[in-house]
Image (cartoon, rainbow, N blue to C red; front, side, top):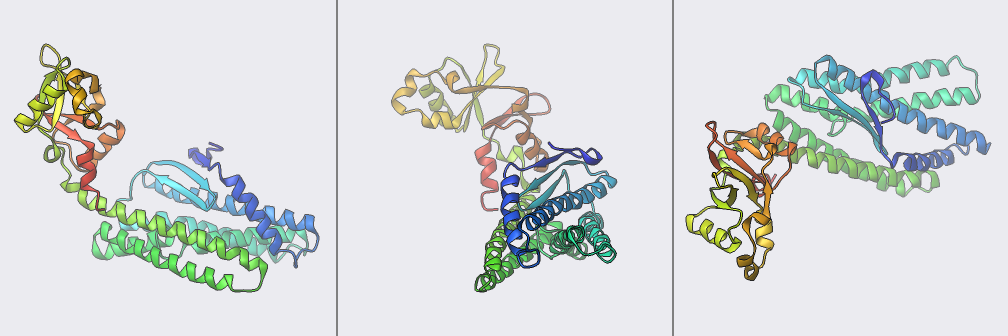
Length: 360
């Protein structure tokens, strides 16, 4: 963490500095004709890159401030080579709030650009004016580019809010805006190929930059589509439906016999119990499968079990997002499901949960 403006933690990717150096070299070569002196050229290029990332930070903080005004918690802001990302903990409750949060960043960026442009009209020609001009262009780039209508850009979120408002279906709105992002990525690829054919060595550096941005947008929009499809399936995800029947076995029982009993009773899981019948461990299915058949008579079932901790015991009635959050809090391969009365209902295997979303 490098700072906490407005109490919001700001982090910088470890790759940021390397990428910033590359950008400085690229922009310095672009200023060769306008600024003959090499030192001044690199000063302006460095100022532009720093102002670009500061502009990104201010842009992201604008999103965060508006989100917090709607009582939506913000985890952090992350600056990475291709820009910034605000980790807002939950989606806005309405398309109107979604649009306001999304438009806040570009609005602030374009306002700063306007102030920078006004200063260039009064500051005399020279290095200071060049630096102010970089402030103007940095914010024009951040503000205008983010208004393009495709996820994961802010314009894509504004577009999503509009589709959500019209259809009343946030999931379908996300998929529509994500496909718009993919179209935008293809347009950027076309621009990159056109730039690559130009004779200017300066522009030849930018076609690769456009391809990197296009790839990022394509991947992020794809993730948005998968996430939307997962959310559509969440209401049908129930721990009770996915549960496997489990049989209790003592820890000292040979694994071969424990597996035989499970197969004979049609159970799909093994629960280790103590002398009083209290569950104490869950036998790992992957560990059982990894154990050769010839060794199973000589291995105790309890040796392949994970001790039952509080986070591994879940109510059988959990479903949807509550179920996913419970699983994320304590990652494991198996969970013990209990009834409201405290009786064991069965075992939830994460492999079964994964299959629900495998085609998302």
